Structure formats: structure tokens, C-alpha cells
Length: 244
Image (cartoon, rainbow, N blue to C red; front, side, top):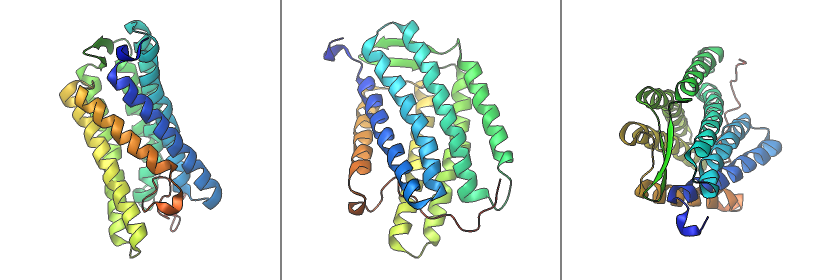
């Protein structure tokens, strides 16, 4: 396929896959060095998202058959749901571990992710138009995805911001607050896309996503000592742990 025929958002999602791959790799290496459990959770949520982004982006570069692309879309969403389960563990660990057992978070998350996957199979559509790959879901799927992002990503953002506000050390405070803001902004963008655009991209969102992912890639490939807020250098939350 000629470069000018490749959908614009395919470039954005592929860039996202590359960025999340390096994020997951850096998180894994950080866990090997520090044994920080949050770094391991970053790896578990980042690796499936990287696979999902590649599956959103690469197939439309190779084929313009909607029947092929929709199958890889289902597979990509499955990896997104795996990441959401990992994020539920992160949410529990940083904000709820001293209040409830993880099972009370995991079971509703798993049930909601399975519901989304079952509802969208055979009902979601893929098409090509206006130099974009257009993935659309039915309304129940869009609402369920929005609910999942709201219940998992927003609390993670809040817990990180709250944790950062209480931390007296400036660098750790900045890391935690910026991480929290990032979770809230990404989840807000995902909810907005679901409710306002049926889950599809626009030219504007594809271009902005590309540059956001490019910035994220740069952050995760610069030497760690040069970063004030390395995405894969999580705050230390290893104290006062409670087993699940």
C-alpha cells in the first residue's frame, strides 16, 4: 500500500505501540533493578496496550479489507481489556489495599471487560473513509467502555495526585502528580471519543495522538537521570502493603 493511502490514524496507533513498548520495557528493567511492585504493574498494563496499539495500526497499513481489520480490532480490544484488569490491580494497590481485598475490585472489572468483549463481537464495524480507519461500536459497548475507564483510570489518577500532594520530596511529588494527571487526561479522551465519536478517530485526534505518543516515546527513551518525570520510574508505594 502506498504511503499516501495509509490511514492517518494507523500511523498514530503504530507510534503508540512503539511508545508503549518502550514504556513496558523500561518498567520491566526498573522492576528488575528496584523490585518496586508498581513498576511491575506498569509493565503488566503497558505491554498489552502496546500489542493493542500495534493491532489497531498495522493491519490497516497492510489491508483495506474491513472484514480483516475488524478481526484484528476485536483482538486489540481483548488486549486493552487485559490491560484494564492490570490497571485495576494498580488502582487497588495505590489507593485501596488497606480498605478492601483485591478480589472486590478484580471480579467486577473482569465481569465488565468480558461483557464488553461479548457485546462488541459481531456488532462493531470497521470501515475506511476520509483517510482514516473508522472503528465504530454500538451504544451499549460505548457506554460500558466509558464506565470502565471512569471506574478504573480516574481513581488511579486521583490516588496518584493525592499521594503526590502528601509527599514532601519535590521530585517524587512531581512524578506522582504528573502520572495522576496523565491517567485522568487519557481516560477523559477515551470517554470523549466513545461518547461523542462512537469510538472513531478524527483527523485532529489522529494528529494529536501521534505527537502525544511521540513525546511519550521520547520520555521513555531518554536517559533516566535527565528526566524529572520518567514514566517508568514510579513512586515508592511499597510501605504498608496488605496482601490480596
